[in-house]
Image 1 (cartoon, rainbow, N blue to C red):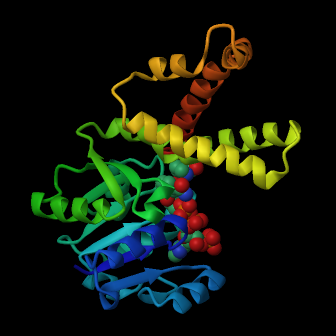
Image 2: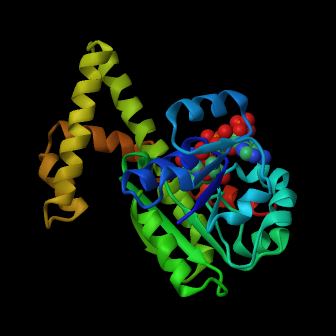
Length: 267
Ligand SMILES: NC(=O)C1=CN([C@@H]2O[C@H](COP(=O)(O)OP(=O)(O)OC[C@H]3O[C@@H](n4cnc5c(N)ncnc54)[C@H](OP(=O)(O)O)[C@@H]3O)[C@@H](O)[C@H]2O)C=CC1
Ligand SMILES: O=C(O)[C@@H]1CCC=N1
């Protein structure tokens, strides 16, 4: 399969590297289209594929074209892409917010898949929600799904409308996790640990707790209860979180991310 990637930043490269790692795409069959000169130099040094700075006629030779520029940059690629796209090609967009119908209209192209991955894709541990236009041939959809699965796990959504919710929950999710880790590390520092010790305490706690979630049949409430002894320390912390509306704030933040995804769809 020949794959062209338009915009080779964090996510474009996470995809490229996963495809190469699982040998789903050969280096010679990968075209990396990147505008930034610094980034292009770095990509050339990595020898991950052919690096070019603009969309040209050769893009027509690729089976799949991945759009991984920022949503705000879609306008800067749509006209050049429209000129070269062929009906049998598939476009896979990972741009937040922008709906399939708008991509189809701007590119005058029918076979469009839309996906929302997350940065753990860099380690092959991502989770991606994806949806497809009715016009995407089933064989093509399977091929795209296989490529996405090289970056981790995936969920096919019949209802494209839910992709903005995927964006809010798991697309942006890694940043929420880092934010909480950072606050816990800061708390450890304020309690007297130096940064490295505090970071070790928090990282190992997160790793162990994640594995407990994965390896138990207890619910999250039961897991919390198993830590929070009656009249003990955890209860004191949880009471403070409740008083500060921590859960409500997190939920409101995630809803704000969904609202922003919907705004991005309007360009
Ligand atoms: N980061 C994340 O966690 C996730 C991001 N996404 C989506 O993935 C997309 C990419 O995000 P991310 O990888 O973080 O962004 P990056 O900024 O890291 O990568 C985008 C790259 O595209 C380049 N670019 C911009 N315009 C063009 C152009 N006309 N031709 C070729 N290259 C161009 C940018 O260059 P320059 O910097 O010079 O503009 C940049 O290097 C976004 O649409 C985002 O919504 C989806 C899921 C998760
Ligand atoms: O913040 C963003 O807009 C992108 C989409 C999901 C994660 N990063």
